[in-house]
Image 1: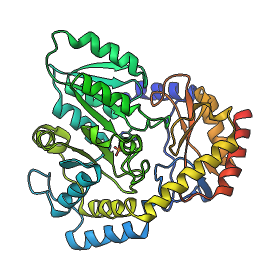
Image 2: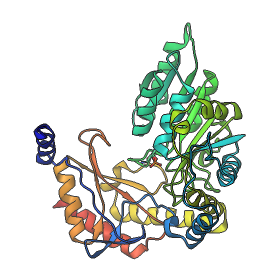
Image 3: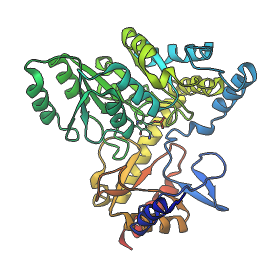
Amino acid sequence: MSLKSWQDALAALASCGMLRRLQTVTGPQRAHVHMQGREMLLLCSNNYLGLADHPALVEAQSRAAAHYGTGSGGSRLISGSMELHEQLETRLACFKGTQRALLFNSGYAANTGILQGLMGPEDIIFSDRLNHASIIDGCRLSRARTLVYPHRDVAALERLMAGEAAGRKGQWLIVTDGVFSMDGDLAPLPELVALKNRYDCLLMVDDAHGTGVLGAGGKGTGEYFGCLANIDLHMGTMGKALGGFGAFVAGPDVLIQTLLNRARSFIFSTSLPPAVVGAGLAALDIVQSEEGRSLRLRLEQLRALVTQHLGPDICTGFDGNTPILPIITGEPQATVRASAWLQQQGIFLQGIRPPTVPEGSCRLRMTLMATHQPGELLQAADLIRKALSA
Ligand code: PMP
């Protein structure tokens, strides 16, 4: 069998700076990592609070493995529902202030499962244009009619909803990232809550990047805006600020029961290993503690410092008080060049290209961690400025 068509396709990607390659990090996801035998400042990890190698999580994970073993042995609906899963679900429901929560194996599995499990061909999903790929795929799997509204444009969304209101059948759901993953800006949640009330529909927020980071208690974008209780479905992940792995949805009991019965990514997959769930419980303890509060404060301070130092010309795309700073580079080749040059200077900052971001808006997606030191971030900001002008 000839592999030529795939070889040609890869060569075409390489020729326009679009080929993706793995870059291996040795050691834990700390502010400094080792790559190819060199120490690098890590500026592209979602380990925002620095919990991914926190001694309390490592200890909880080892304890859970020692007590419950390494594998869950089955899907949740067969033999793989362990007491740790239920403890974490109870904690997550309490954290988000909902009746119930359900674990999924990843954020990708959660979004595809939630949308496929709750929505069907009679229904309409209203989805922000810059929502995460897993939401886009969930919309497709649901077979619901999906109407995409311009990014954060509540007026345009309202026009779409008004246009559909006559002879309405089926359920409606508005879905949005809380913090947009590639831009770090925030969904206009208070306005979306007003619309969901006006049109009597569900509001689902993917808070993969807000959970643990935003709000006084780290409860996410809803808490930040003071409208946590008005969100119907809170999706969150444990793989980012919570320093572990896995994901969840929190919401009303009837919707969680529906998902437990219908969401294919939940039903047909082995449940999370107990060690991962143990780490999730320990992460929630920290997020809700004084330590969590001071890590969030530190992140805010680092963000203020870096944005001030980078200056308004580079920070034009920064919006929302989050650790995600999109430094726009435009075209793929320039992005790859800037990222490679920074790597030579000891800075690991990946370039992001289509289809992850729209054509012409490639970027260096810089992410801050509470464990970064101010001085090293200022030096990195100077180098980033140089990389952009080279
Ligand atoms: N939603 C958003 C907004 C994300 O950024 C991501 C991860 N990139 C996911 C969902 C998927 O989460 P996970 O990595 O846990 O699959």
